[in-house]
Image (cartoon, rainbow, N blue to C red; front, side):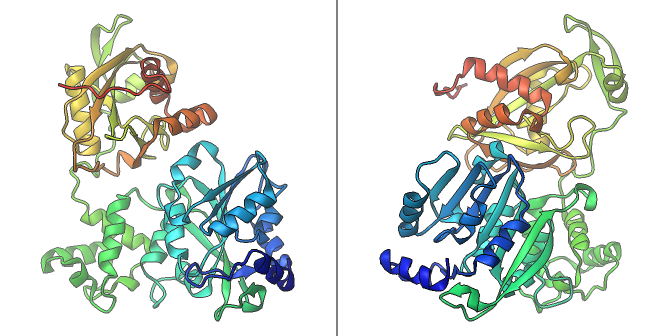
Length: 458
């Protein structure tokens, strides 16, 4: 669609581009096709387009994927897109602010790729929603205001380097692909745009760290850019001297002088979680049991797992009052199912420990939550759960409490609607630890879909 055709369409729709919504419609079809090509859409990909507008990019994506999700805020354009694209099963249209889109719904639909000509007024917030640590997106090609794109890709040491840079680069490798001039849009903006591509940073590129503490630290560090970093972080002189020595930087350093790796290292130095440096140890001792779950001896973790000896473990399902279930993504340091999604909290019983005591201990150690637990099910050993006799317990999130986990144990976690988990397990069972799949099946056997589970009391 060229400029004249777009103007005729907007006139027919009685639509004047909104400056508040940042509406600058792409009118160069060659540029649209080039952007779509950069996403390298493969069979089976779910493609999410943010701000499709009149469909300049959408037209280039149609036919390349069987799963296209459009997110448009302007109700007039939503009506136009629905009329034009019809009710086909391959296109799903959401009338919604992209900053508020629930990305949890995309986990069952992976692999997910993101594309869009993002509005100048909300590009940063849309990126934060779709591409943050909890994001299921695996690759993105986006067009943004050039100034914002350069901030995202900025190296340390300059004025462009800041919170947005670090929030994006901590998870993504950023490439500036192409600058696009104002003549490619209607109405013509006063600034250039830039197309960027984001691909996941390799998992072992950075040490494990607390992502929420990292975000809080960079926000404090850049709150007053011209101040020395120590003042922004409000750290005592002696402690700051130790930190700077560990980082290899001058005590007068400012936020923009630290590299991404140094910001991560600073986060770990500031992390006061007692278990932050305590991943599982191969010399931990467990009870070994027979086929009847009777203790017959003790052995170390390493021997138990290597020789497939039967032993005991506990899983805890932590529920929010709205019915959502908290899932954790296991740290890559785990010796079993690293990087997989798992129960809210889970772990082995210590020698001589009772299941209920272990459930409460794991809930405290892994999520920082002290709450009563209730037995839900007992499960037998099988290969998928590591030959464990498992008890599944339930806990409810206390009001006003947020889970906090050690980075050595948990990469991150999130509450999910149980319906989303159903879809996710059905479509991508490989995303989950075997023990969780067994526990989920047991829980679903007494809480089938469509039946509201009662919150236990006492």
